[in-house]
Every structure is written in C-alpha cells, then in structure tokens.
Length: 92
Image (cartoon, helix red, strand yellow):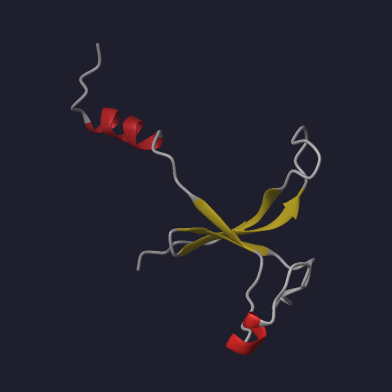
C-alpha cells in the first residue's frame, strides 16, 4: 500500500482538485445612463469581433487563448473552446 504522506501521493491528490476556468469573449464600457436604458433583447456591443480569440483565465491569470466551437456530441447549442495558444507563465 502506497504511503499517503509521500510527495507523489500529495501531487496525485492535488491533480484531482477542480479548477474553474473563466472564458472572456470581450468587454463593454457603457455609461451608467446607457446601462440603465438596456432592455430585454438589447444588444451590448463588445470590443471584439466574433472571429477574434477568446481569453481563458484561471483566477485572474490569463492562461490561454482559444476559439469558440460547437463540441461533438454536446447537443444543440453546446459551446466549447479550442485552445489555440498557451500563455507562458514565466518565472515572475
């Protein structure tokens, strides 16, 4: 039976911790007046085009860029992200 106190056992447990990834498709900067005027079916323009890459964040750290896709077997309207570039975390 493996020793649960070894560094390898700790790394294996750490690998099973879920991590939330946030995908950003763009930003908007309306004024308060513009925001208050929004109604159902209003369109809020973003600072990106539909073909521009999306950004993937873990916490506040940018980790990758990708493109929106419909995943195979995901059902109608399902959404996924194909990674196109990993961001180098660097040592700083």
